[in-house]
Image 1 (tube, helix red, strand yellow):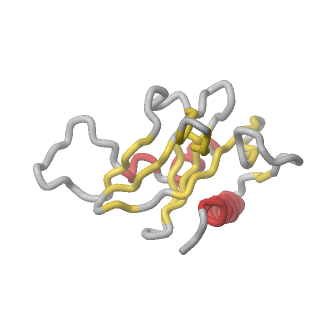
Image 2 (image 1 turned 120 degrees about the horizontal axis):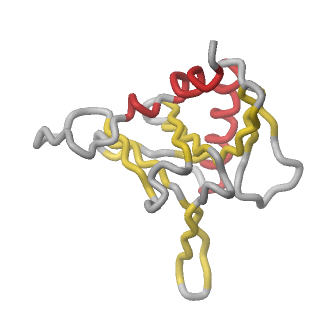
Length: 145
């Protein structure tokens, strides 16, 4: 069983590796403790990237959009804001797949569920399909021709 820190390290390394394979420049901040883990150089722009370990629950990949830490009053959650982070990159080891969301999407949520298969009740409205957030496809689109 991996600790929370180990899961974060696995996600960060996997995401950096996958981005590098796509031709994205990947850089790390010098100091730990900031709101983002990596910096992606895509074209002429730098993107602050928060890396997340995204578990699979049934047919849903759960991408958390907040940090959680223990405090005297219990768990304290803090959402990632667009002023702090540009992209949230998620690695799902159960599927060995990568996803990316911009922080201005789903700004009011602490987590986003990405469906990998149709729901049992065939709901389609309001569903976030995992394929729509595919890491390779979205970064390639940002890279341009």
